Image (cartoon, one colour):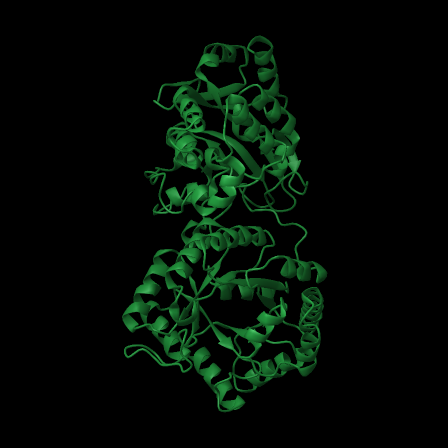
Length: 585
């Protein structure tokens, strides 16, 4: 979705919004930390995020990769910076086409800074000299597909011969096709309001988002502000006086930006753009101080949506990927159409390969995964302990869970712990719900004023030795349907129908049924579920190690089972397991 459309919608509803900027890190560890931080800060519901283009285009590929990841595998609308520095028209054209192919629909068009080691900016022999030329080029090549933002300078660009000339350059960028303006950072609200008025005076009516940045340290402040005009002297003096006291500078920076943002809001700004410097706590604290974080931040669906526009009408998915949404998104990225309303009515195209973009968790977060799952395994008890620790909240992820256990699963946590202690290794579940208000805290999705229904569901690995009696028990529990399969494809089931296991009823809408149990999709999912034992968890160990062989034995001999209790009113799926554990130890 184009950001300008989101901005106009927010302006119409008089909602103050905010957005976050990040820059590509230089190390693998930095990338791990950044991706995790973007995901956490995404839960604050920014209107959009943007990712910078390194000096002289030095991070072009990484910038594109990060934008690809956040645009397609999170619900964060992402704007990619693009500069003229060191870029020919052919290279710019290629980069824009890649962005479009990846579903990225927003560009911040900039002239760019001089390459590292140089002081004077020079255009490429077959490139552009001004951001306005880049904006024209984007419009000529792609028409109205991209939303385009440009930079504005409340104090004037440092290279401009006059303030008036700089404003005219800004108008050229807007006239060339830019949709909105993001300002360089500033610390004086009057400077911003004066800038905005002078823009109006010369006919610039595009929305202008003020860019603000908390002061993080003396050195970062000095480095950044040497390129910015009109930093108030009292700000420089205060920072200088505290240059040897980092905590004092941080506290001052937070208070300064909190007060600045409040003044901007009181003055009628539509939204605020935060230069995060890839840091989280200060921006979060400022938003809390300003009471801008929404109280109700529920997802529209139980699963995480993609910000890619082509998936806008997607409304149903198999439940199996509930805890690995990025894998599902990656494996369906090439689909031309997506299921809407009913999974059973949809002619499913082939799922992509397991190892399609993006990388799995061990590649995205290798350090954290090694620390959490990479401890030597002596026996099956050690493996059970990891699953129990996850259910108890002692660890944040497992190889089958990208994120901590969902809030609603707290209602069944004790049951899940019991299953894992008995050797049934759980990888997915949801509690039973019958007309629970969508305004209840335990409900994690749906708009206000609706009602949520869920069939109890649990998915787990079970040893081959325990399967025989397990299968015989189902005839005594007519409300239960199940599927069971091992790595070789030997399977058992008492149903072959698509089964809606989650649905919601909301005012003025058709019934939504966003998650289903689909037998055909389960056959695809089992490949990934078994593959995780060795390709993800096993990758943390030497192949000749005891730990690896323990995981290999489970992968080769266990069954993957899912069970649905179709009586969402009076059923109790846990009595099945209680009865089973009384007989099978």
